[in-house]
Image (cartoon, rainbow, N blue to C red):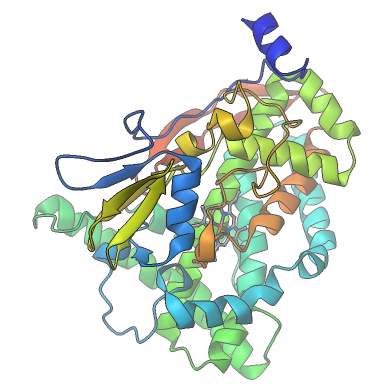
Length: 405
Ligand code: HEM
């Protein structure tokens, strides 16, 4: 098998690194189909991209359809569409440019050095905690959540993200009331301990971050809270998981690790992109059609009626052999891709909602891993427990114990 893969990948040396994670749900092996509930499922890269770029759709993932507008006059970025969304992306793009991101490098380097010094002193650490700390620090800096203690904020956010999910039309039950209460307590804690102090500080002295921008746009404190939670989910939780899965690939494959550490900045980013293609943290995107759609599938037109739920599967899209080349289920950063395809495939999404944090996510991962993987006598002390995340149809690494002897 390995020889066969090696010959197919022109001797790509990393073939032993096969996919580690799997999504919570798998669709049927067809490019596009409608199931008996009327939901649409898309697994083909080109079809998924055309739908995400084509318009006539709105967000239906990340609990968008159970979120009540309530006191919100504005939805968070992930749920906005049309002109409001374009304006929000344009006004916040400056926080994500490679130039802005570079200005965080020293902060990230110092933080990582300190974290790894502590790790070396104690000899053992949970990598999923280290990666959460880093991801929270960085996304918190972009957002402006810098007026509370980091460990406390992580605990409060963990409470919120672990508070379980709601399904549209779910029946009222004790379990549901418990879910609602837990989620509300977590939200209040985060609001009073993290968001309000940050808002007050920026009202007194504006800074170069998202909260300051939102205050300039006259967002209410509640709307700012919702945007902070959106960035928390979008930027912190995702990057945390990616750092863990990438580290596990490197720790299991010494050749890949050595080549990564010897590579230059651009090559290292390419290797990380390939790992993210193989292990998409967000395994599924969901949209609802707001008008009848016509989708071209290899020359045949498929009609999707208005109001349909459309599920787009990123594991499957990223495994399209016509685009990424066989075998798709192994690490190979030397793939020759069409010019229109990004090397992480669709792992950062596509179309107007494509992840603005794509560069910072890879940069912070790279700063961490280049330091972490250089530690002497580093080893996995306990393989992570890998669970599936229903909301993102992705994976979660927990209790991933690493040690230095
Ligand atoms: C490896 C890490 C990351 C992955 C895999 C990832 C993935 C994604 C994906 C798939 C989307 C599209 C969602 C959709 O279309 O429904 C998205 C959107 C978004 N991401 Fe990321 N992301 C990562 C890191 C980050 C970071 C570090 C930040 C910010 C600090 C961030 C901020 C956002 C925001 C604000 C959106 C919403 C954009 C919009 O709706 O216009 N992400 N991300």
